[in-house]
Image (cartoon, rainbow, N blue to C red; front, side, top):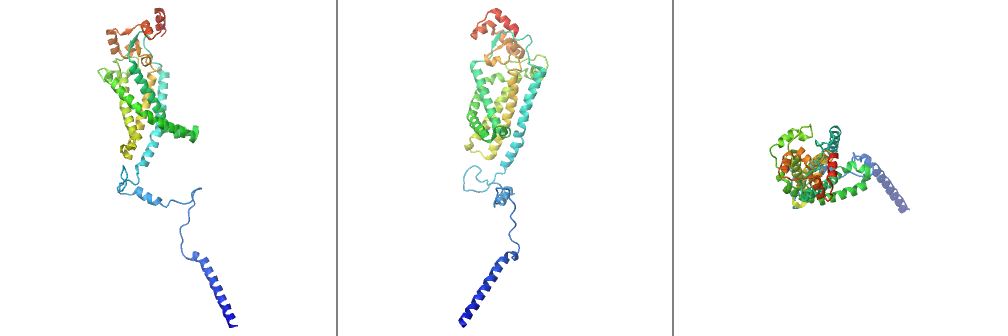
Length: 362
């Protein structure tokens, strides 16, 4: 009887203890003081914050030397966070990416307005049909090689620079990805060809592009394009010489900076790479903009200009209008071909009556 009573008391004690313990566990969080901060509301798909954000923010913005000590040996291996990367990215977006389209479109519109208002720059008396030799086959081949490679590099480069903004809305991300990838590979492949062509152009044409007496006068008179007055010029006039040296100097800057970008294993750091990118982009934009004017003047802008790079010969009237000092030398050396002689040279013999008629029509 006594044992049964003791067992009943022990059972009640255990029951009461368990109840009190359960009540304490349920009420303890509410009475234990302030808990952890409330979890913020995250955007859809984001479940937590990066616990290292504060750490990397402090590392990035610290007022200490950016170069530390590391067992890894290599260029910039002692730099934990390169803060110049963001600055370069912002500069690239805020400057060439934003302003390059405006510049190129403005050049096209100016040339279009000039053509509408001024028209094609003609030759007084028209073309005579009498031709004089100007460029060898090698020189013309070199010119067209450089021109074609430059156009390819210009197109692929503009795709890489402006494609995300201009092409993704038209073609979508997947097709643009294929175009951009092909443009990158082609740009890297043909870049060295441009450099080789540029060096050959330097060797072949440098002597005839040295500035001489009379070139400044040509510039002051607007090269005969602005106004009606005649301007004197040698084998190459001031405008052609300036274009030549612009191509050579800016082209070399573009080529060297391009090699630095394509071959990072030269040992250059990221700052040099970023500077090279800026030089490459701005140099290319300038060269593309001026080349549009060169192509305009060499085709529909000036009467008789394109023939020199087609056959290697130019009309003597064209030479006298734009390169009178060189034309005088051609007269003195008796280097001028009649229309019949030039036609036979080209494998298209014509009689004198046809030649006269053709010259009159021109």
